[in-house]
Structure formats: structure tokens, C-alpha cells
Image (cartoon, rainbow over all chains, first blue to last red):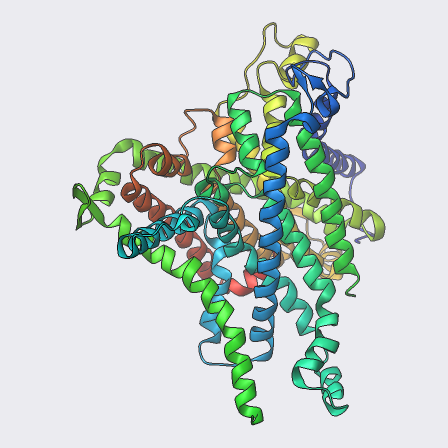
Length: 284
Length: 289
């Protein structure tokens, strides 16, 4: 922090006001969404008609709350299933990648590292359409050749999982690699001297050291999967995850039930975000 | 089994998932998309290799106008995000410490954890005709009828800046944090003005952060779909919207793939130029975000 620099009082206060205004700007849309989840009206807009819990628990039309709205509940479950698989796959592959890039030197390492980072700079829509085009042509070829159906390669949940996995793995790799770099190899050597096998040493010493990072990567993967829209949009089939369902509703015109879902999402993402921060803190 | 063989086996076992991931989900799909973009449909399931789809893009003003518009709107949103975010990052990095620093930094992160859809929905409620701002203006007496603030370029800009702010502020705070305070104080002691210090000391030091922030924000704006469609309405004319309609509504995958490649080309070009101009590597830049 810089002290002892001459600054006029007016400047200091303008600066502070600007910073305050900035945080109002950040909070405004989120607060608005949350507040209107409790408005006793069928439109999420003014005038304020009074406070109600109906958009959460209501079961009479037009006040069908989130917890009685079948399509939304189903899409939350769908999102959960997708997020689970994406987190599992990306943490598993990310851990392997971390060991490969931190522990091994091999020709072409630099090129592979750049390739590994590429998914970060490919727009999500492009990632989605390229996987869509490729999997469809593979499916066409296979179906022409065998006469069987390959539904898994058509738009649907499997492709959604693969599409999200394709870029979330990069994040998992970066998080887990950063942790592995801090590991002292002497600990593993000690285990080897004490008679552990190579794999036994990794399992008993190195992996537990990595658990917080793997946990953090998993939480981040769940968050990113839950809120992903662009890639999912191009690969989705008949079972829509939550963001897609909400988008379709939003285009038709919204009721405060969307505010209620959003409020729940905000609470859950804030909790998950804090969890990932705590996990990262435990590493220090 | 000898040690060397075993470690070779470990190496290949670790390499396999990486290659499987990169080859089947990144490399082959993009090669495949490029091949499809070079296909011209001449009959039912009959194709010829040609640049016809790219020719369609250059011959149809709507297409390249939308492309150019997406590019310059993205540049504008990047510049705006930098101008708005820089003072905030400087404040967090240099004028606060301890607990309040952590709190302010966390408050910048929170909107990012929330789905982009929710954030955009929030702006829709604020900006629309029956929305908060419109009612506020009428209440204060500045307007005597509902004002529609949604479905124009300014609304798109607000949404883009809001969505990408974090990706600017985080790298800026990181680089500004590493600037030694005594350099700034020395500048003041030697009689430099605030502007001169900003130009000669702060900005040169923050350059890596500025570049990586700008690159990420530009890419995110260029590839954004939700914000332009929801805040800009039907006539938002965003390039990703064109790609979506070619793929999903028109079912013209050949043209859609060509569009996808053009967008990917533009985005890669900007990243490349940005990195070259500041002599940075992709790995270092991405590590900051």
C-alpha cells in the first residue's frame, strides 16, 4: 500500500466514489434477479406487488414454484449428471497430464504443452460445432459401414460431456500441475528407500499431497460445466441441461420462476466458489 | 522388468490420455471442420472441393458486415473494459491492504462464478421497457413514458463489459501487485506528476497484464453468443449468431463451418499479434488468468 504520496482530498474522494460505483455496477444485476424472485406478480418487473415465496414453493397455476416445476427440476438433474462426468473425467486426465508435464522430459513437450493450452483460446461455439461436425461424420461413416446405429455420436448428453470436457481439462491440468510443482520429490524417494513400490509411493505420498488441488479442480469443473452455454448449445439433444432450458424460457418471455432458479444458482455457485478457494488455501 | 522399461511404460500410460483428448476432441474435429468448409454441395450427397463457401462470405455484404461489426464491437468492449477496470485494479493492488484487499478482490470474482445467463437476465430486468431504470427515470421525472433501453448496441456493450470485467481485473491486479511501491514513491520524490508516473512507471510495468487481459476479453467478446442475442435482440447481428443459424436453423453445415473457421482465424490472429507485439509466450500469458 502506498502512503506518503501527496494527493488532493477531492481526487481521493472521487476515486473512492468511482470504486464504490463500480461495485454497485457489479452487484446490481445479481441483486435485481434475486429481489424479483420474491415479487408477487407473474412478470419479473415493477411494480412491486408484495412479498411471496410462491415462486419457490407454489403449486397452483400461474404460481408454479421451482420445486414443483417438472421441466426445470429435470434439467437440474441433467446438469448434475453432466457436471459429475465432466469433473470426473477432467480431473483424471488433468492429473495424468500434470505428472506427464511436471515429471517427464521428452521431445515435442513444448508443442504438446501449447496444444494443451489451445482449448482456452478457441471460442466455445467453435469447439461445439467442430465436435458436432466430426462426430456426425464419424457416425455416418460407421453407420454406412456396419448398418448399425451410433446414437452416442449424435447430439445428446454424451457429446455435451465430451464438449465440456474438451476445454475444462485444460483448467484441471493447470491447477493440478501448479500443485505438483511444489511437491518435494525427496518425500517420494524416502518412501522408495523404505521399500515402497513406485506406484505405492505415488499412491501413499504424492496423491494425498495433490488431493486439495484435485478437489479444487473438481469443484471448478462442476461450476464451469453447470454454467457452460456456448459449447453445450451446439451439442445438446433432447435432454437439455439447465442453462439451455432457461435460455429457451427466456426467449419466450420470463416469469419470476426464472428468478427463483437464478437465486438458487447464485447461492450454489457462491458456495462452490468459496469451497474451491478454501481448498486452494489449504494447500499453503 | 528393468527400471528403464517401467518408467517408459509409465510415460506412455501418461501420454495416452493426453493424446486421446487432444487428437479426438481438438485436432481431428478442427481438421474435419476445415474439410467440410471446403465442400461445395453439387447434388444429393455429392460434393466438390472448392472455396465456394468462403466466396459466399465475401460476396454477401450481410455476412462480412456482421463479421466486421462483431470485430469492432469486440475491440470497443475490450478498450472499455480496460479503461473501467484499470483504476479498480490499481486501487485493489496499490491502495488497499490486508483484509479489505482480499474482500474487494473476492467481490470482483463473485459475478464470474454465477452463470452468464443469470447475469444477462439481470441486465434484461434492469434495462427493459418495464424495467428498473425505465421506472426510475419516470419516477424522477426525466421521462414521461416507459423507455426501452434493451435491444441496442449500448445494451450489448454493457453486457459484454460486465461479463468480461473479471478477466481484465485479475491479470491487472496480479501484475500491479508485483510493482514495487518504492518506484512510484521515488517518482513522486523526483517531482514527476501523477500522469507521468502512470505513463513511465505503472503502465510499462503492467503491460503483460494489460495484454493478457485484453486478449482474453477480446476472445470472449468475439465468441460470445448469449449477451448479443439476449440484450441485442433479433437484429443484434453477431457473428456467432450467424454460425448458429447456419448450423441449427438452415442446416447448411458447409457454410457454417466456413464461418466458424473465419471466426477462429480472426481470434487466433489477434492472439498471435498481441503476443508478438509484446514478445510474450502463450503459456506465460494464460498462466496469469
